[in-house]
Length: 370
Image (cartoon, rainbow, N blue to C red):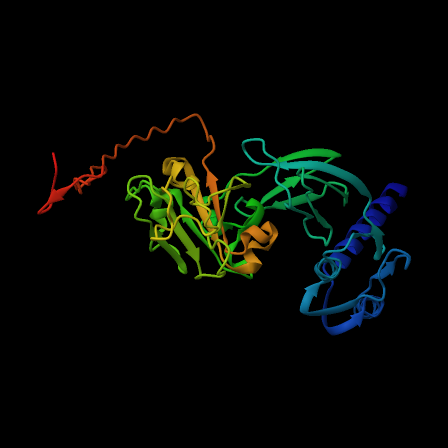
């Protein structure tokens, strides 16, 4: 007889729990306090809530519209992006409690082991998040068994379950599809083109080797809007004059600042004993030989990309020397285990072999004296 009563009692509990779990409600509220929303759910169902206002944001505005939806699904939507959880008892009590938080620290790296500063790290389903510092490290408080969502420009977004770990290293994989929309800006920082408030034009290294030039600056002709490139008449190895968006100064140089892998490079096209501050532009007043410029020594096969920063906003971080614009040159770095071999040969011949008279002497009819 006692066994039968126990079986009947257990059956009643199961039926009660099953009934509670299938209850459905309809809500249509806009900017209503969370405490009031919970009261409405209690009025439309057999549930009763138990919570403490010390950690439950009872004054938080809730806007939700549902029709004939399970109460558990409604609660999941209301408590989304909060650090709260709920549990349902057999008697219809819903206990809202705070998730236990644990400190999580870690490092975000790329496939080559380099750290990624500025990477976004957030806890999935919540508003908790942070970003990595200059060394690629981060720290935050996250609920137990949370999932971290890590994203960085040019890399695939990755979700990592932390489990019981308190320290973690996350390795991101490059996303070649996203890299097409990423440009190198001031200080070598990669950003999405649509996120910039100024003009940046990027030229890939592959386009610089299709039609080779002795001076890599000449390869930018016709590839960048607002970039005026003219070769001086100095012959083989002569300097190249580059101006961005026209002449900006009458007394100072109008040549842009060249930055190679973050290091500014002096590139004034001046000749020997040339006192002209504008450099040797090949005019009749530049009474000095043209010894070329520094950018002419760069091998185009070593260049990964060239970014042209136009205007004061784009080049402001480089100071006064960047008043005429900046040309950022990023060289290639080792990737994988492959070897790339490039070889080319360029030959030039002097076309004008005029027999100039260098020693004073008497002559007649265009013929110098013997």
